[in-house]
Length: 377
Image 1 (cartoon, rainbow, N blue to C red):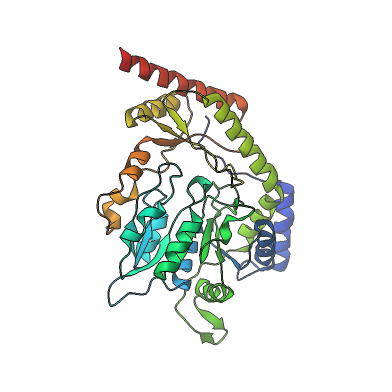
Image 2 (image 1 turned 45 degrees about the vertical axis):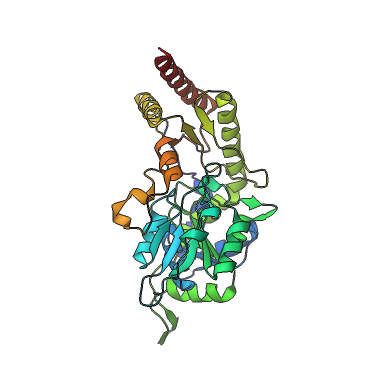
């Protein structure tokens, strides 16, 4: 079987050395030495400051919302955050968990990221934040979003779960916004099995977030605020340190896989691949393709599955259609709904073989050609 993804597993010998140290110290959590080491190394590698490690990417979002105070009601009414419907559900469900109403704004059809030109009209007196997503590691229009945030006096929290190591115009994409959050789930380019991080623009926000991740405990006898347990443990950090040693090789391999996919799909009618941003370094996180219709998409997914090749409708459905989120959005996210109905992510992981790519592409090519032949008949 060819799965849609596989986690990168580093040298067992190297990981065992870190684990031996954990056993010797018997320091398993609560800001242990490996968490401290990983924090410093990630700040250096990513070119950022004020990085806080947490236990998962969803809590990274929730801690960021709390640390920046965007969850506070406005004039007795719930705060609102403008966000994208084309993302993983955690971006919006984390807002709801914090009592913030998601207000969905449609996406740009070229970048698949939140369309900044549609943000202003969605602003209300209760808007406290903009929560965009760097979809598939593709950067949002960060300059325009910053302008709108400054104009309206709201915070910007980027869900950068897909953007590990991505540089934009020579600097870390994670440096944009009041905060940017990362997911270190096992399926990500860089992982700590489970885990995540928040990068804050301001040190005072970092210090506030540290309290929030540890129950609000300021010192042994002082609890200064309501917090939660969101700490990363030493075993997660050990995995992260091992993966970080190999991350350049991992990203390089993933980029080569994307290059091969691009070459085999070049010129294939009815299959659209995303164009890379020339100002962006990229990290090879995902390989999404869009088909002409949802019927065509479903036919391809079924054909791949019949050959034990697993793809994923990532992201589907468009979140503005979920009744569980009870969003404040009017039905105007047509681009997101249309994109979600036609997009699929193909297998992509560091050990994917050229023959696997060619086999996947051949099945897709056959399905597309059969679909077009049927339409012409």
